[in-house]
Structure formats: structure tokens, C-alpha cells
Length: 263
Length: 316
Image (tube, chains in turn blue, orange):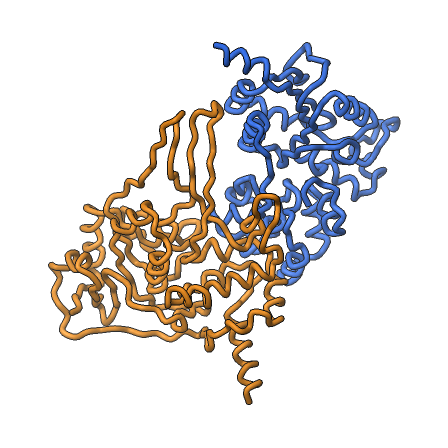
């Protein structure tokens, strides 16, 4: 009994917040097989998506989902940073910018007029991942993040183990599963330059890899470009694929000045 | 002494085997691979399988032990007596290579339980270079198709028991084929520092395709995982790849094979030089799977041939 009491007092205080985004990553956490186990290990103090009255005091770990699209987002982020010991970027949007970050490479006004033809009062800014505004301690990539990885992370923080993302490319897991290579079939798959850890979810289902987990730290983008040139793809097609999720990070990776946690 | 069987009655022979054994043979699904079959019609022998035979002996994720509080139970594989049918000469020699290195109980258990039946391959393709790799006869039974019959060579007592009922052949048939691809001079030990390797290494994407499809690559990674209550857990073994940086990463974050070049050279030198020095056989069996699987078409056999050519010119 004594042990149990100690456990309840020792539980880490966790908050799950979302800024501009589809809330899909937070939804992944609520899935039955994931949520019950997380709830057992940590104390979920704040979760505005499913809770009405949320704890407003200091937190140990704060999970943040979404991209910074408005100035209000930056204010919320800075408040959360002050309140919590560690910030965890949850999902591709907060990790690398996600789909909204595509706007960085397009004409802002054109995009604005295309999506909202009537509302002229709206302001349009460049969507950026959260680490451009606050210090981020951990990243849980992928769109949506894998339940396995979320659980692994929560297990690691509750038992004081270090948590590290894999540095192997998607290809390694894909090949181990025995999938036929989509690149060899002539499709533009970003597997060789994308960070693994997703169990090659897309290539296993015969869909190309879009690079939602950002570049693999050891990627050989130069050789990959040469290969695509040989196969008859243009630079534009490759860049368009890379910009689907992690365009900003791929760009920084090529320029070799990555600000992301592990290079 | 060879046995003989009609090509038409092979299916009957196999159906009889399926009754008593798990029969593993090459099949064509999303990829070509070795798989347990129930019907001999599934067998696909036209092309070399993309997934090598080692997957049967070294499964992708193998449970080694499970623990619950303070009790540890070691897990042993439960396999029925198995027959591997339709393996090519290179596949069988790859098993010979694995036998030299893998000595753990799980592997030995699977190995003892298995009978290897080889099949002569009629169509080596442009990537095959097994002729250059000094392959030996390593089988329990080996089938040579010739003139409407299979001539069966017997390699062990285990294999002999399977073909006792078949008639003996009047003459012995052994077939030989010719590869278009060859490695002429395999003595590359002195060329480790040669800059020629850089061209290949610069093309490498570090995708690990070559090591995953290699029938003799056997490096593995052991992981411990605990369940959420932290009282139960399991230890698993899964394959690793020397072409990845994480392979040589140690505590503190240092990776010993940091450059792509050193990783690539290690792959080639392990196959051709290091293993030969230690075990007297080449680790590479010349199946050409790494060349077929490589997305950027790196051909290290070509590089070795260029090396030997330049050497000849230097001597003159």
C-alpha cells in the first residue's frame, strides 16, 4: 500500500495542448489502447480537447500539437514554455511544420485569395514549427504520431530512461518487411532520405513515402537527386514532394544549418 | 549414385512430403520469397527470390527470452521438421556460411530440423556471379533437370531416406552453366586505400537494401522492452545493418564508422577478404541480390574488376 501512495504523489504532471492544427495528433493520444496506459503512468493535468476544467499551474511535460500560424499562437507557446519543465513537439506540424508550412514556398497573397476569397481582413503569416519560437526538448514526429512511439516516450520519461529517435532511414524498416522497392518500380518515394521509426507504414501499403518524419540525419540527398535525375524526374517534382510535410527542414538540411535537435 | 524422377511426377513427390513436413519453397507474391507451401503448384522457380533464405533461419524479430518479475524464461522455437525445396546453389552455400558463424541454440535448433533440397537453376541472369565465388556442393538432395527427368544427387543420409523408393539413374548427370558476370581477381586486400571506392560510396544512399537482402549478412541487434507495468518484458533479436550509422554508435554518441565510404568498404571487404582469412571460404556466394536491390545500381564487382585491370597495366 505504501508503494502505491508514493507512486501517486510521484506521478509526472502532463499537459496536452494544441495550437493551429487539425487536432489529429491529440486524437491519436485518446485512442483506447494508448490513452489508458498513458493515464496509468502519468497524471494528465490539462487536456483542453477533452477536459473542461484544466489545471493552470506548473507542468512537468507539455505536449504541443500544431503549427504557428497566427501571432496568438506565439503568445500561447511562450506561456506554455514558462509553465513547463520540458516541451514535447507532438506530430509533424510542430516538429517540421507539416502541411501548412507548404505556404512558405508559395505566394502568400495568392494562397490567401484562393482559400478565403471573401475575407480581406484576415492576416496571413508564414507557418513555422514551434522550435522557431521556443526551446523544444523532445520531438515525436510523424503525421499523425505513432502510438508506439508515444508510449515508448512516456515509458522512458517515467522510468528515467533516455529517449532517442531512430537515425535509420525508412528504407531499413521497409526492406526488413520485405516490401518491393517503390523507387525501383519508378515511383518517387522519399524513403531513403526520411527518418525511420514508422515501420514503413506507407510503402507497406503501396503508397510512396512523403517524408513526414523529416530528413534522416545521415541522408545522402545529393546521391538521391542524381538518382532521380537518371530516372527522368525534374528538380521541381522532387522539391514539391519534399515540401509536402517537411519542406523547411529538408531545405535547412541541404544548406547544412539545421537547428533541429539531432542533426 | 544418382536417383531419377520424371518431371511430371515431381508434384506427387512433393505432395507426399507436405504430409509429413513443413515444406518451404520459393513463391511469388508481392515479392518472390521463401514461404511454407501447401500446394506444389505455388512453387515459382523461374527467377531468384528477392528475399533470401536466411529469413527462415534468422527471423526478422525473434523472441529470445521473456521475464516476469524475477522469473526468466528462455524461448525456443517450435518448428516441425522442415524441408527447404527449390533453393539455388548460392542459397545453399549461404547456409554453409551462416553455419560457420551462427552457433546460438535457436539457430542450431532450426538448422538440425531442416533438410535442404536444392534445385539447379536454368536461368542465371546478368547479376549472377556465383561461378567466381568457388561454391561447394552443400545439400541433402540436389535436383538436375535433364531430358524430361530430374537427376537427384544425394548429399547426406537424411536426404537419402527421402528418395529411397525412387529408381537409380543409369548415368550421372551434373550440369554447369556460365555466368556473364565474373570477378576475375579477388585479391583486393592491398587496395583498401584506393580512391576508386569513393565513386561507389558517393552514390550510396545508406538505405541498407544490400545487407537486408544478402543471404549471408547475419548482424543483429538485441533489444529489451518492458511492458507498461514494468514487471514484465521481453528480449528480441532483429537484424541490423552495417550500412547505417547507428550500427557502430556506442554509448556517449560516438559512431566508429562515421563516413559512408568506410561503411561501404567494410561491406565489400568483409565479404571478400576478412571472412576468407578466417573461415577459408568467401562470405559472398555470388547471388547478386545486393546488385539487384540497390536503388542507385552500385556494382562493386565492376569496381573490383577495374582494380585488377589497373594492376595488370601497372605490372606491364
